[in-house]
Each structure stands twice: as C-alpha cells, then as structure tokens.
Length: 102
Image (cartoon, rainbow, N blue to C red):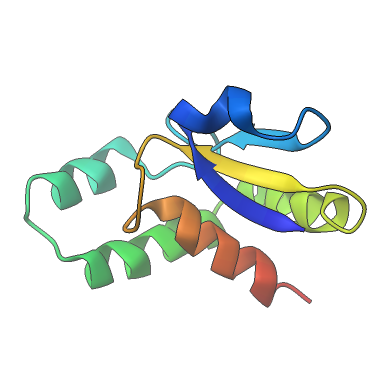
C-alpha cells in the first residue's frame, strides 16, 4: 500500500516498509524554480499542483519511478517521505498520481 509520512517519523516507521525520500534532490521532487515560486507566495497551491504534475509527467524517469512504486506497493508498504509534516506537500500529489496509474 502507498502511504505517506514526514522525515521526523523515519525511524518510527515499520522496519520492513519501503521508505522513499521524495524531497529534493529526488527525481520525484519539485524543481527548484517551482518550489521557490510556491514558497515565496508567487503562486497558489492549485497552480503549484498543476505545474508539478506537468513536471512529473514530462520526465520519463519520474513516470517510471511512479510505476515502480505502484508495483512495489502491491506487496509492501511504501512510504513517500518529505519534510512537511502536514498537507500541503507534494507527496500528497504523488500519492494521487500513483493511485491514478493504470
């Protein structure tokens, strides 16, 4: 199953879980420019979500990683881990994207 958590919980997650750090410089992180635009308030979360999805979909390596994680989650608990404790965080978008995969 695909799940999410944040970095401070890393050692508290189940030992047998697959922990995937999606914070920069991960292939599943937002670009520096996109992150800067959002954190500086130049764009809203909705705009961030749209641009982030485009970034991921335009990166074949990132798309392949999403498929790999979906397949892996059929037999193991897979945690997407980032620094933000709660929503909003791009890991929640990644969760949606993985769930949307065929």
